[in-house]
Image (cartoon, rainbow, N blue to C red; front, side):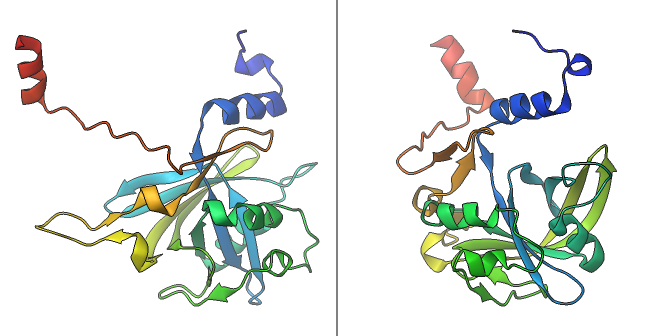
Length: 217
């Protein structure tokens, strides 16, 4: 089948796009309003964009229905300029899914999921204590595009449990023990996710010199 975007309803474009741009990392975002009330919500339109400076990008659609009402996460980031991205791992997938529920404003997603928080080192917004890794971010900019907002965050601090760090050796590293962290990825709009446990494939990059040797052999 072929789909021309100008002839395809927005909901269908969403369904198709999120099934093809996959797997995607999940930003499990904690944010805080100006009164100190916490919000926790997952977003899979997310990735890192550059490292110098360290910038992550996240797409947050508006609330469904008429008007252009931002979700709590986007509104909180705009008003306070801070947020934390907690890494979603296999052991926390069910609790993350609870935080995706559209609870009333007065209900705490963290409380409903049985989660606790821990202080961040730079930003005021706390991280999820049960998460094994987290990125503390300050808003770099927010762009409104159609019915969505693209939030760019500058990473100002990271938390990673010691067991998932390969220390620096001989000027290389540190690295993340990704094969042990067991991060989860989002696949489509049908509730599908992908595990990384026992799924790693190592494909070393080929230098030009090795490429030339291979052509001659």
